[in-house]
Each structure stands twice: as structure tokens, then as C-alpha cells.
Image (cartoon, rainbow, N blue to C red; front, side, top):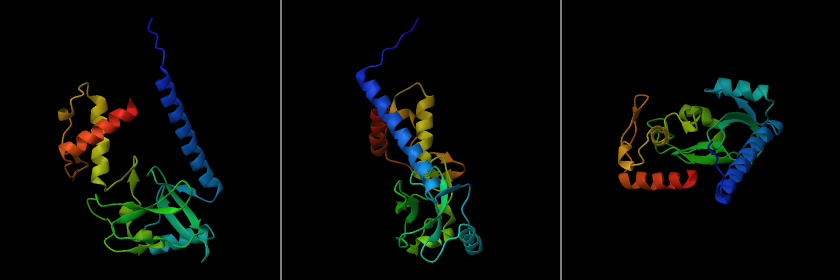
Length: 195
């Protein structure tokens, strides 16, 4: 009979993961209670954006927004009570745990990353900033490559970093290669975290 006795470090890591999971679940549950509503997709044009705004009873001081949660796990629509965010080119927006909008870098998009500054209430003009899947923007090549590398790493029995490809073609989109040095550092950090 096999028996495993977790070490103190194992228990500490387990407790940390449980606490983080509870925090994320609580934060997401709090969103619905405070006027952030999960949606499968965000409006993708002015007409749909205005219709959704009317449906939520948003006003000139509580302006309609639809954006992903900061971890890109879910889209939410809400009436934003703070001043509009002036978003710099090369960025999308995401909702922080506190409910405040933040800028998220989109420099690794295959295409569709905003090329000029814009107002957060006009996010519908940048549909790739509203297209998320499995914790990544669907056009973010680096995120998709990292996710694929993690999947490859968990499926392979070899721990040799050279077995992980430097260049992947995911869903027909070629991902930018990551240098072996950068990948090695990311890999070591990943191994340290999951240890």
C-alpha cells in the first residue's frame, strides 16, 4: 500500500493555492453582486453597445462597458462609475479585482491590437481585445505559445528543456519564437512555482 505524507512545504503550498482559489471565486461572486455581469460575448458595434447600455440602465455618469476580467477568464458588462480610461495604443483593457479598469498590453497580437489611443467606452472598435479563450486573448501569439508549451511539458516525460519547440503554429497562427534563454527562464520559474 502506497502512503504519502506531505511535508510542511507541501501543506503551505496547498494552503496558499486554496486561499488564492477562494479569493478569486469570492472576487468573481462579488462582481455580480456589485453590478458586474458575466456575458459570453461583448457587443461588437455602436448599435449593440448602446442597446446593452440601455438594458443595464447605464447613464452619462455610469457609462456602459464590457471587458474581460484581468486574468482573461470571463467577460463582464457593467456601468462604470469612474472617469473613462484613456487607453494608450498597444493596449486593451481588463477589469482588476477591485473593479477598476486597467490597461493590458497587446503587443504580441497577430493583428488587431489598437494602433492609436482610445477611450475605454469605445472598446467595441477593437474586437480582438474582447476575444478571449483559456486565459489568453485569441490573437495573443505569445500567450498561446506559452499555454501550448505548458501542455507539451505536462504531456512529456522528459524534463529536458530542449524538447520544447521554439516555434509553434497554433490554430493556423504562427507564434513568434521565444529565445532559448527567455524560454529557459520562464521554464525554471514555472518549475519553481509548481514544485
